[in-house]
Length: 635
Ligand code: NAD
Image 1 (cartoon, rainbow, N blue to C red):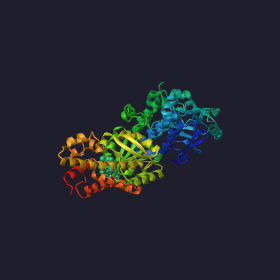
Image 2: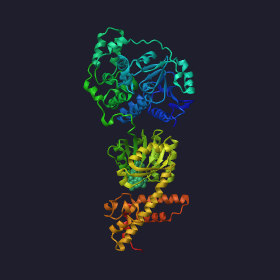
Image 3: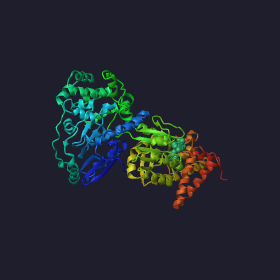
Image 4: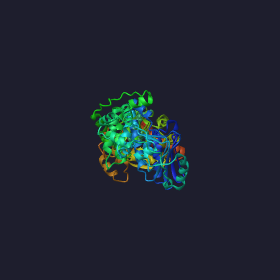
């Protein structure tokens, strides 16, 4: 997968990640996060990669933050989920960087702010140079320091954390090292050679620190001025001081969001404990991120600073009047919405919420995944977000699942959703369609940098509801691995049958057997009737003798006999006869293309065709063949 905003390659013994979005000061967006995370995952156990180099192109910034404008646009449109899912993933990436088992060397030049600190500020070897300006300026846009920023701020010596967190002041190289945001100063002129040495040796021992320019930080003043318990205490102390430094700091605080500063201070104080780790900080930060669009100053702050640039935000609270309860409301636990490192929930789009798709989607929701649904018939599933179109549902999804009536509809839906999907996501079609359609859709998806799986199912609506379907899957190993946890929820078994189209091949062969055996089972029952053999005896014998089959034992077409089935419900589908006719048509189409002799499949097709088109079969379950045979004689 290629991403224009980040370059990922292996140089010698180093995995090398370079941010290549200098026109936006390398601001981090969702796709960049995904690409970096995938590289880290791939290199973790790759013996060829001894260490990782993380740097950025452009003179001005390593990374000046996250893509705030995109978050603002989503939040403004009432879509809080998109930014939330970005934050969740970004924080997972921050954790992986901080806890990575191999050395990561970040070269932090120019601006390193917010998201940039999350990327390069937690790794094992953080290099700063003459141009470095590190800051956590979030309170200025109505947010709080996140991406693990509060972790660094809470660990900073004295009251430096409070100072840098509330004011967003920039740290030069010496201040950054003092505050714990960086490890060593090396003149930037030496960096290119150093990167070569890292790649050649694979050893961070080639990094030799130089003496940074002197720090100008008035630490004693800061420790005295920022020691207050609450924002109000700090404001009072600053006002009472006649130092120039205090006046300047106060001026900054007067510009920033009062609610954000009060929350930031509370976060730093809560986190400052010996048991602190980055995950604790991120969990606390996410409580705020989750709520900040609705309950904080974020939208207004971004509007004023970044969108309209009028620099006159109307904050929710006056500087001296932030109610403690509003801070508590931002910081209270999120319950099951809480951020955890574990990748529990995927973003799933589900297109086609009919007899099968509806219960399959419901099972994914029950398992904790976030599902956005779309069905042309307007069908919805409890707990799923409703999208206005298939393309809208597919936007930002990790996996797009389709469960549609036929190949023509699948092709149309695929043409719609593929351009909306994020590269790297997987299009997972569970419908039963012809092999050619499955392969054509897979080709389209691959051309767009997506994974594709054809994964038709067996098990009917009972299996869909109970989560016991069998999936027959065609497609790549990588896409299969991504979808596997979903198969485990919706089914009891997923068989990887080979490349794209092979799932459908398995399915149509299976259903050819199913159609043939259903007819055989129904005609045998009708014959038994005429021979005076009661149906229960027939079932008792056949279900335990050599004539047993799924159609007899699990889906008995005789009402009142065997386990509950559509026969006990007036032959309401279940699996509609027209869908069986479709499947038999697919198997004959494939048999013809492959020059396979399938006389029983052909006869089953003719019988279902007659049943659906000329008799009463349409809209009936495919087991309604039994009442059809019942009524007939040999003529
Ligand atoms: P269904 O008709 O109940 O569901 C299909 C859904 O797709 C409908 O709700 C329909 O409104 C929706 N749809 C159609 N065109 C659409 C579009 N362009 N965009 C969005 N939604 C659209 O059928 P089903 O029984 O759920 O079967 C779905 C698929 O699963 C079929 O391919 C079928 O062969 C296969 N299948 C069904 C069973 C079964 O027992 N029902 C078993 C195995 C496989």
